[in-house]
Amino acid sequence: MRVIYNEADFTGKASVLALGMFDGVHEAHQALIRRAVALARQMSAQSVVCTFDRHPVSVLFPEKKVRMLLTTQQRLEKIQALGADWALVKPFTRELADMPAEDFLRSFVEGMRAKAVVAGFNYTFGKDAAGNVDMIRSLAGEMGYVPEIVEPVLDHGERVSSTLIRTLLENGQEERAQRLMNLDV
Image (cartoon, rainbow, N blue to C red; front, side, top):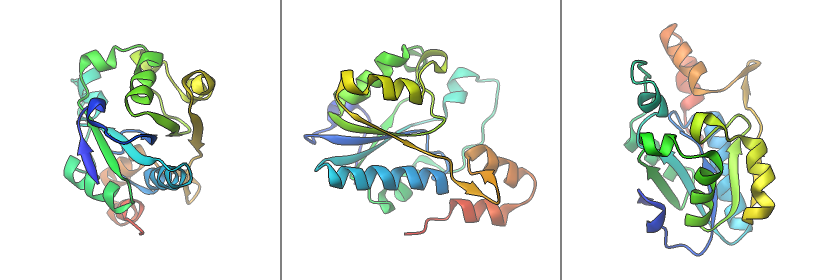
């Protein structure tokens, strides 16, 4: 897997983008990345997992302390194990946070020559989190990609998320948290 830090460094002819923070690369993230990898194979493209170098909350709300579930290196190792061809580790800055949602999406789609965009059902992006899966769907025709939205992954009736895992860890349920973050390849 090749790791890049800017869209301009992507040398593939076409990609399938997996968008998210992927801070835990937990079961729900794994489902999304696997879908992007499979779709890339079907479309004769390369899978690119787009993530950030830090949690957006640390830039948007510096007074809040967000516990990262994995280091960037640990995330990259798990992303690679899931079969991704590339990882884009985008520096999350105030300027990126202030980018209008459509411009944010367009920069990834055009820069990575995306044939498809894969995102979780609750993914948000752009200034004030104005972009969401509805925008991904609505701009697909104009920007020339296939939208692929991944539905929630449930565990004992609860939606698997980084927030759930943080709560489990805070409540001493490390075994369940680890199970949800284990890589099953």
